[in-house]
Structures are given as structure tokens and as C-alpha cells.
Image (cartoon, rainbow, N blue to C red; front, side, top):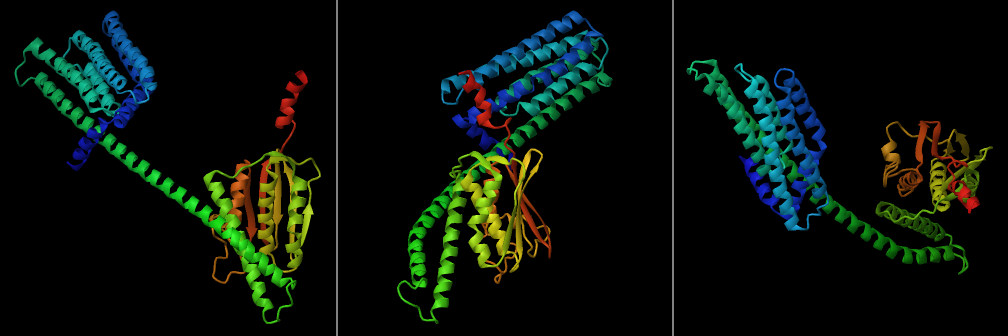
Length: 469
């Protein structure tokens, strides 16, 4: 009963413009989408009946059924162009749907009744089965509008009763005759069709209600995400300006340009300067993450030499590497290694991988950066000799605000955003990023991009047109 009440409540919503438009479009879409499936079954019925009954009358009535399908097709084009705003046009389409439904149901019923009339034996199993199939098909696929469904099923019910009464009028059998049993069976079938039709209708209305809830929840989620993004961007920008001044002041103090610091204060100011840099890095990562999520990060794609890209990234981290005593080796690709990408963003991605490898390497360790070709792909890999990554940690490795070593006393600092941002950048370049690792041996992070060749270089592709000009 609760489900039935919900269905009638939803039915009241149907009379709103949005509900009416959606119901009409859903009805038309299914009617056009299933036309060949529906007609294939009627054509098979016509061919089968023509083998045993008068083929001329069979195919004449079947042509009437096909004609109603053509009318539905024409109506579908008109309904597809309706934007739901013109209520007068919507009512016209609804009237046309009702007219076409009545015409189609009558055509199908007459087609099947014609078969039943030509069948002199009792039972009429074949035409009743065809009619039952048509009724179940309607219950399954015409449940968007209860009025249209009831209209079609009412015509089919008349055809059921007409076929069931043929033998009663022909033979006037006693109540004990199997003909009466068949008649009562038809009545039971009508009840069964009505029951499953209501069940399909209620299920459809419940799905619509669920879709409304999902859309509403999706809208609330998007609104919350937008508010979060704006808040994050505002706070980050507001923090960056005073933090830059604080870091600059701390660096000025540590440089002894304002005078020598007492030895007891030097460690304290050093810690403050390092934490200021970490906070600045966090803000930059938050801003990048917010831009990526909002789709506001701009990329300028150009042809890039992968070897030069790697040399530049390694050079930008050389100061940090020498400070912690780690040797970085670069193995360039001997072949032409051109890719398409945003140089600044790819440097950022490479710097994140290098910084990650340096932070998790032991002192006096080594990091190897390699560029190589793999068929139509270019692979850039960063190999370290650190502790390695345990199995099943990929979600944590590329997650937001997470590190594999997430304890309160973890060995290295960081925002936990670098690899997630790197992954997003690589994806925007239609590339892939992954890693292989072994505990106690080290890890290899690698990025792969499409190799730029003369065939897929847009500049080369445009050259013939320039020459032709």
C-alpha cells in the first residue's frame, strides 16, 4: 500500500512540466528504441499464421500494424524537438500519443482477432499467446504514463474477451465443457496482466523517485564542493601573502644581514624557516589541487624533448640532493624522444617524483632518472634505493594527504599531495603513471607518454596545406 501511495504521489508530480516532459520523452525513446524488436515478433507471428491461414488477410492486417508504427516514428521526431517549455505543444503531443496508442492497440488486436476467427478448432492458443505477449510487452515498456498504459491494455482486454467468447457463441457449450475452462483461464490471464502492469508501473515510479533523490543529492554535493573550493582558494591566497613576508623575514634573520644571532637562537629560527617553507609548499599544493578539481588549471601543449625535460628537472632539485648527500644519475634516451605537453606542469610532475625519491632514500644513496622508448611510448622513470613500498598501498601512494609512512613520527615531511597532483597532471597529458617496488630494495616510479612522430605531430599534419597555399 505504501508503494501504491508513493506511485500516486509521483503521478501527481507528472502533471508538472518537468514530469510531463520526462515521461513523454522516456515513452517516445523506448517506443522508437524497441520498434524493431516489437515488429520482429509481429512479423514472425504473421509469417507463422500465414502458413496455416489466409495469407492475404494476415498480411493485410499486419500492414495496418506497420502503418501505426510509422505514425509513432513521425511523432517521435516531433517529440524529440520539444524542449518542454511550450505547454500547448506538450498537450498536442500527449493527444497524439493517446491517438497513436489507441490506433496501434486496435491494429494489433484486429490482426490477432483475424487469426482467431480463422481458427476453427477450440482453444485459440496461438492468437491468445500473441496477445498475451503484446500485453506483457506493453506492461514492461509503456509504464511511463499510466493513462496511456491503461488505454492500450483496455483495447487488449477487449480483444482477449472477444477471442474467449468466439467458441462460447459458436458451440454454446455446457458449463462443464473445457471451453468454459478456457474462458475462465482468459479471465485469470487478464487479472495477471493487470497485476504485473501495476507492478511495473510502481517500480518505474519508484525508480523515478530514486533518480530525483540522486539528482538532488548530486546537486548538494556539487554545491558543497564549489563552496569548499572557493573557501580553499580564498584561504590559501590570504595565507600566502603574509607567509611570504614571514619566510622572507626569517631568511633575512638567518642570513645574519641584520646582525649575528646568538647560538642558542639559531636552531629555533632554522626550525621556523623550514616549517615556513613546508607551509608555503602545502599552500601551493592546495592551490594546484583546487585548480585541478575545478578544471581551472591551464595547460599549454607544445613539443618537448624528454631528455631536456629531465635534465631541467634534475638540475632544479640538485641543490636539495647535494644537501642531503644523494647522487642523482641521468640516463638519457639515445633516440629522438619528443612528446607533447606543458613544460612547466611536466617539470612540476618530475620535481614531485624526484623530491619523493630523494626524501625516501637513505643518506649517501643514489637516484637514477632514465628516459627510454617503448615502441610508440616514451617512459621517464625515477629509481631510488629507499625502503620500498608494501603491496596494496597504491591507493595510499596516489591519494590525497596521505603517505605510506603515515605515523606521527614519520621519517620525512610533506603535504601528501605531490603524487596525487602528479597523477592528475600526467592524466591530462593522456599519459600513465605507476610504480614497482620491493621492500628493502627501493622503488621505481615511471610516467609514460605518447611519442611525438611526424605522423601524429599536428605541425607536420598542417604542413601540406601550407605548401599547397
